[in-house]
Image (cartoon, rainbow, N blue to C red; front, top):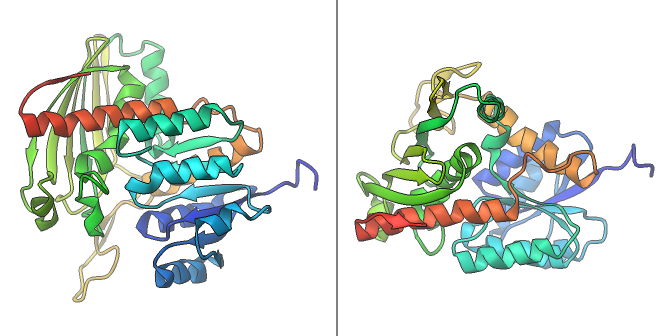
Length: 339
């Protein structure tokens, strides 16, 4: 097969909600194809395979031993990301891994070391880097159109967890680690390294958050080394997804609103019993472009057609983790945490 005809064959590790988002994205990825999946829950894996015409592997080892498989897309619970990335790289596979890189800095360091010692592509799922108009905002900031950044304010509305492990700090990490990590990476990408962190919040509504002593709503304030200050409100209780972002500089302001101003807003009256997707939905920019474009970029990197400059490096994923580990520490200890 010539380089022009080559196709990247990818397998999904995990078959839950986010795996389906990525599977849907691959319907429009050029020269990349999902061919298989695996999940410890056999019925879930079979359901995903049926809907997307995939083979089902019994476990990760079976995928990693397949010589015809080029890459794995890790969409499993957060606690196993580090081990699965390291195993996949050791087996010679390219790796796309959902955020976060790990749940501890020690595990993140293992991933960074494994990625440093390989020529395989390693990319992490910070899809906001690929969601219009966020990349354009970064270009404008870097070009000085807003002057020197002074402050950024964001509100991040995540979907209520679909499984108990999301709430557990030892498995999913809670709303800060699981959901705010997207904006931790984004703020570091836009405003530079973090210097100190302060968090307020709590378990206001969700029983799962109360059981595990983790917040379902929080406000995280970051002082960046540049002098800029970012404030991020994150919620699992708003009942809808997507975000707003305002950036203020010495010479101007930029605003993004993916709650109210996507290309299409959709409302479907809730039914009894409820259907997936009832209520407000915003199906275009984040879902169509963010996830689809990051997967296209990953495939293009494997094919040597993209240089990787847009993607979060393992070291950048580690720095986002460092920030979101400091945030709940600040909340628990009721103090500012220096980084």
